[in-house]
Image (cartoon, rainbow, N blue to C red; front, side):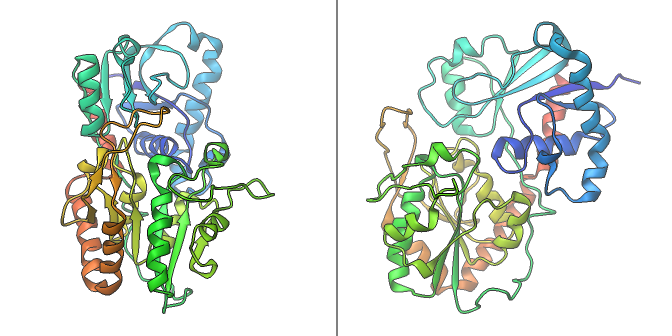
Length: 392
């Protein structure tokens, strides 16, 4: 019998941000694998498991304890000695891992939106293998490093994010438009507000439902993008999303801010919606929010640019094809980004409003496409495991 391999996922697990959800789902899929033992690179606290149902929590409890005990036993040695393990370093555009360690096999997983990555060759030279989550980022990494880069697309938990009936709690005479993701320029919440304000002027029954909060409030404070009025912070320290929308032309009764909505509760929200609107200027992966909406059978209006090109087709979404160049503002390289056209967004919203049966059919096809293409966390974990073990 082959020994169990330790695989370190060197980033923070959690349930309310992208990297955390990746870690949570990979760890959960591998927690009871006979061939590998997952170890999070940072301690797993009870709070990071909030929202997981008791059955799943009990199933991974032993693996959580084993991961935490591993680092307790190792102490500071894990920062200086070469570990007898495989280590996958999650990193952004600075190409710096969450914790500096060395292992027998070093794998880098760079996820970045900036096209300014001249430092990639030098920064990634110490890694044995490279993989990322979209064709767009893989192409940039190959050009910058001259090395092979494996693409392994992110997934969605189709057992949690799935179609279902509306609850009946909400006003059935309203038309609900969902938009998610932390507030930042590349996520284009400014375009959502501008487009919805125009749409709401024609349709007083329309409601914008936002899930735009994140743990990084200061990164969003003051953002305005192409809007006249910037985003402010309330006296309680939370982003004042509702006021921001109202100050930029959305009637107060036509916007609902969900606040800090735990990811595990979003399926119930998505099933109440009629359409999702995600006109991101750039996505390094394929946008978890879009995949979660698609998995719930919700039609999605989304921008066809960057990493999204690996996800969107003419049949599984309402595509925003008119993408103009995004000027570099000096903070991030924007080559390859896309600025969605407001007229096209408006037309897409109008289509979803006027022909709801056709829009619903798109949502149903989207879920089928995700499953057929293996865009699930189960498949992501299986593909990554096979690839890693093949290079042991």
